[in-house]
Length: 84
Image (cartoon, rainbow, N blue to C red; front, side):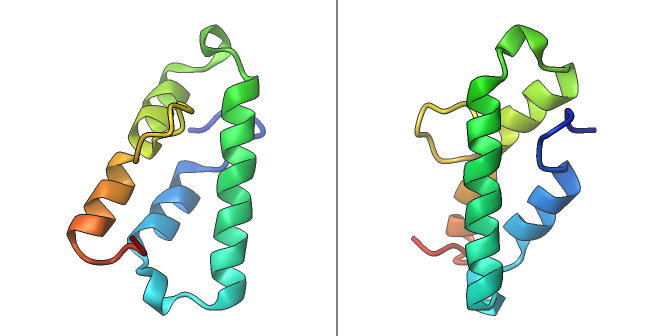
């Protein structure tokens, strides 16, 4: 379960697993806004205040703010589902 004020893990997974080519303009824009908002929340929330599950979720999604590609993005790109 994600921490209060953070994007749910199921929303992140659903967005990550749907190929960008199957998303409409508004869905892609919504995903981008949600991702930026969640990333900002990750930055503002100190590590010591994050739950264990949130820390794990941030690690998986790449929300550690080190400008590294997430595991989910690496998988999407390897399968040809990403936009890179």
